[in-house]
Image (cartoon, rainbow over all chains, first blue to last red; front, side, top):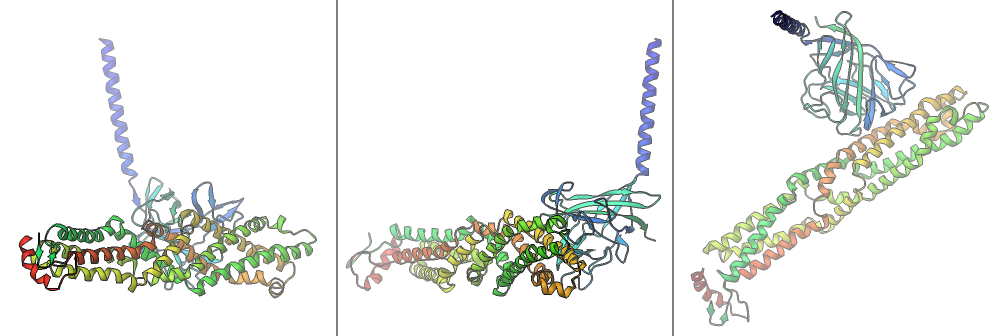
Length: 233
Length: 342
């Protein structure tokens, strides 16, 4: 009889504890609901030291390569020892703005084919010709309508879409978004992910996007953005 | 049995005549079905895209330009690994050599002959097919190809059926069919298909090794290597020459091919990159067209049905004699009887 009472007590305690845990989890989930970050993701300029890069940079992986091992396309104009890193510095608007487009200027290219967009990043030499970034309502390469970039924070983890991210170079445009226009993730295209500190607003964002079509068809761009988020007023 | 004053005539409304018209109807149906069987409605527009996208590059000026680009790269690389290398070694007391100071260039330099040979070979191949490309481009748009079969096929089928089943079409139906048959025969002649289609076939054969994913990826790789090699010359080797005391003018005077390569590099990129893009974008389009029957057969796809239609339609005309020479009045005599048979 005493044993039965003890068993009942243990079972009741277990049930109560489980209920409390579930309640706490639900409460926690409520507090980590995805929060859209609307504003400027101000970029920190890329830097190289000891053969590796930090800050904002991009690498291009050859067809059939991997994000980690490459093989990578070397940019002779890179300021790094490892020429596979192409560093970027913030543009006139400081970086990436979510919730709106930062389109190509008109014209988008110089007579020599250098990209002129400078809102997000400053044009950067890539094999002697400047490349740059823009986000456009109509993707210049695919001519598809694409949404403005959106990024959300869920407990310090960033997710979102950057479908409109477009690289321009040599009078050509390459969609470098993720997902790709239309929603696909071809090849080793990876969704946008990253980290965010609500206290310091420091962020790191990465994604990968396979080039579909054109002279770099099958190559994949790996994008690494760091900096400080400034919420829109 | 149809009889006339002068002997037997063809039984146009039944037996052999009807059978002949059935065959004509089958030919008409085959012309309609051919584009569907060969998936032409899906494939030929891809051919039209390929022809259109290659158009800006298939001019003598552009093709000569690509050859010049390759020659300029070759001259710049050759001068770097000879005169520049000698100069650097001599003026640095052996401290600066290509091997020790610019090992990435040396790697590229070893690869370059293979790259140059392959790229020049490809350009030769493309250039040799410029005339063939023009011949194909001068044909009516590939998008229209399926309709070239369907358009005559539908009336041939319709008139053949009418000639079989509608008594009042028994006489004029075959005549109309003969006209369509003549049209089928003359169309390839009018479009000079007998000259142009074999040219298209030669172009497709020449592009067979060109328009493959593996080849395009190899060229993409070459492009990366060339960009890296030129970058080392532009960003590292020439500045080293200048650090050794040469002014830019002296560099240009001593090493004109290197200077030309540097000066022309952006133009070379402007030139070559879109071409690689078009090659890459058209691999699937080429494969679609290559899976169609061989180009040289295309004129015969019109001529043979045309001949068949003409022959059978003539043979199926009512009242024509099969055997001995018959007076023309035989026709008028035989018609009432023939109608009665059908």
